[in-house]
Image (cartoon, rainbow, N blue to C red; front, top):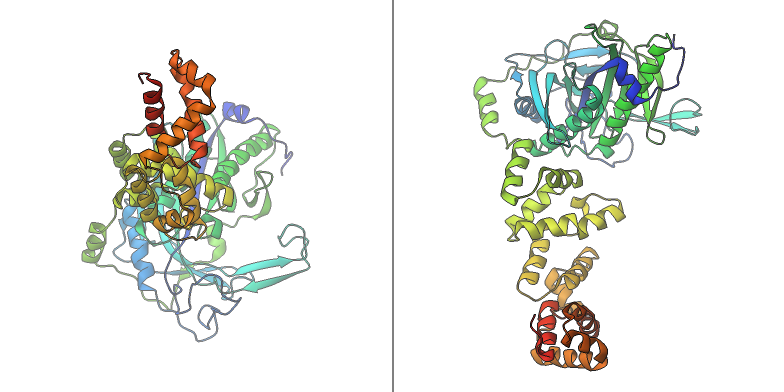
Length: 503
């Protein structure tokens, strides 16, 4: 039994124990229909409007395998350097829970479609850590329970529960790592980096949007501790359905500290599932974890085995995209930036937007500047992802072109981007509607410069006396007079010419 729930410090935990992790990631595939029936997978429909006798487990209803789901599974397996089974089959995983209407989940047990692979992940300081993959197998998702009446949204304390079976039967790929050893104090960081890299890979393959906040990708964090020098693994806990990168790291760290506290006090770790709480960064007990035999797996009698031909597998292998890590390293070289800069771009979710902006004609430095500056700030303030902003890479490239040709300066460009984001039209339309073009009329600029000099005689005298840095005040006066629509560099040149001072 557990003697204490107190935590020891992270440093003290690592001083006595080695953490061992196992990560199970469920990826919801982006197929149009479910894994074993023709029901739509579209999000946001009325509860129970996308369910049929097959995904509800009605007597006599027979499943049919979704071919796109199988293809997606093979692509994922190949991208993870896995072996692809020449022959595999589905199994029934038997358990009762209200959101599982058939009382079993159609999954794969001892015969997965992909097995024995790996994924290299890069940590914040550039170190590459290889995570070995045990298997990737096909299965179906469960329905969704909504617990009503309690304070936490969980079943404990709820007055009643509602069930929505729209999600029941949606295709899932479960990717299971081999035990991750040797990470030491960096174990939580490795867990986060692995899930992040896996998400990038899934998105690159085009098999899922992998939006963790929408449940399209979620991670179960298995963790155990063993005393230094001991080979045998400790008893593990499984923190279920963690749905953000930050939470994966926090869950692993918390469980390391909790396990150490229990073991240090003479307690015994219970093999159980646990819930992660975003607000506190802590976990609480769920249920005692079943062993595989408790699920009474047996081959699914209503589905034929899956036997992908070697020709098909090799055709899919030939069509795989560049690995995300290799692509980032290539782009980093092309853009001439540091590993830290690329990590920041990755964390912001800006890589594809920057690449598309460059493809639309912008230079790399300008594309990075706008996506990682003004647009990242706007997305952060709005609480949305960069790709959800109402501006396209082509429009950002057009703003860059207007700056490069001298029609806009940076201040005006920010106003143009603001107008595009507010739905006022294309960059050119916003420029026209708001009257934002740079004042390039030399006569108008000269008049504004002369007025600034006349109105700031003391500053002008300082500049004539050799204090050239004071020119900024006069430039500011001209920019104010022209509503920021002058070319600041040209204004400075004109001021120094008028004052007879070398720049």
